[in-house]
Length: 140
Image 1 (cartoon, helix red, strand yellow):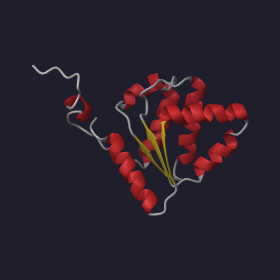
Image 2 (tube, one colour; image 1 turned 180 degrees about the vertical axis):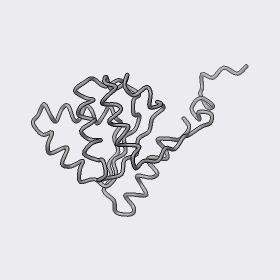
Image 3 (spheres, one colour; image 1 turned 45 degrees about the vertical axis):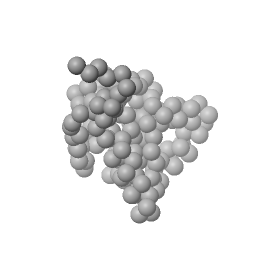
Image 4 (cartoon, helix red, strand yellow; image 1 turned 90 degrees about the vertical axis):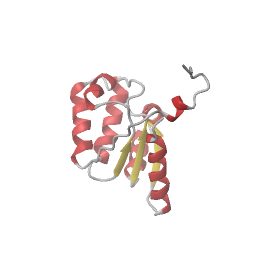
């Protein structure tokens, strides 16, 4: 509600307009796609396609817990992206909570390590637009 996804999409649109190969996924959508492609025997093709991107946007990072297999697949994407492409992640979670979402504190720490090495952290503060404009809002 404070504009994280909106800003990520705007950056993605600008990247596309500048000719960069860009893809947007919610984390849940990507994990499901990775798991399905592994089941169908097309995981390496999907990973190759992701490696060819210039910018990968992962929205709603940590909103839904990811099982161990999904965490490992997601780690592989992050690891493959390290120092080879730009990533944008949107999340409400502080780093200390990532281990609980991705089932493994060490894997979460390794992801964080790769992300923060060359990363920039933008903190969005303020009132949620959706909460401010909610139809069910209680006016005191």
